[in-house]
Image (tube, rainbow, N blue to C red):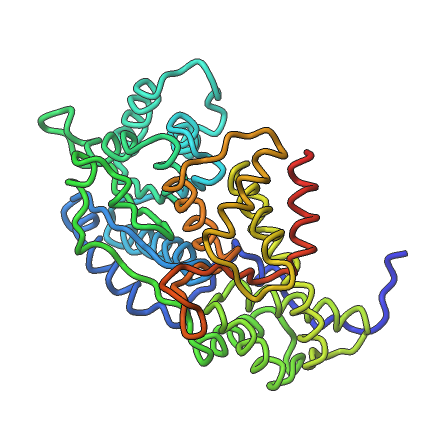
Length: 387
């Protein structure tokens, strides 16, 4: 059953995982230098620092934060200073207590998941940090998800962590990662702890940059000469529409798996084309999983209204959304809240919402589906709503 024919193109498929962080990040040198400049005082003076990393999906925000924290910890050790770091996935841990518990678990993996208040957990965290004489970098990935549900009180508590005792050292620094502008989600007290000059932007990758990224990952993951140069070029080209390195790496891995299925011994352009078709389906699915009920209903309305059309207006979308709400016995959101739903779906890359151009009368916003036919999307959303 487990017999294979031919040699696999992969030498280390692990390096194509989204969790893998390469020793050097291609085309993120500028962002790394900014982080090094900002956080030097953490090592040199035990001075807390905070920063915000912002940009769209697949632009290297999380990988850069991880690589930076690993390098900072190593640098601090050489300076005989103790720096550690922990990453909180705020999509999974979007409550204040869950986020703080995860941070406490970094030092106490068996700490009970209930029975302690947030204040008590923070006190325990302080004792752990003081005992170890360590400065902790807390990375809040997809921070907007935590802020949206729990508010910004947790940010205030962590940034003011060193103020309870007159002689206490600053123990915690923050890195917030978000696709959205988190300053709009912070209250005045929390926002005052962040300098707007400490925002580091991550632009979408160009085709040439994606080509370099795919080349690096191919060298790490595949055997020598196990992929055609033309195949790398096509991967970069098809993923450049979004400037998304994750999509490019996903296509590379799928193409390699298809090459293995055929015992081809090398990844070629046909494997890439087939992988692209599969990746379109899976990348859309991953976007749909995290949607809340009203986002699903809005998308259901858009799918229905988009049948046979290249685009629809926001008015068309809102009418179809209200019909979907009535069908599923949900009270529709008001117009302003509906517009927020549209912006969320646009940010997630499920739809494109942009100002109308030539050929459309009047000035309005038009909605276009990106990755999936309207008929297929409608069926998928209906299935999800049943569950």
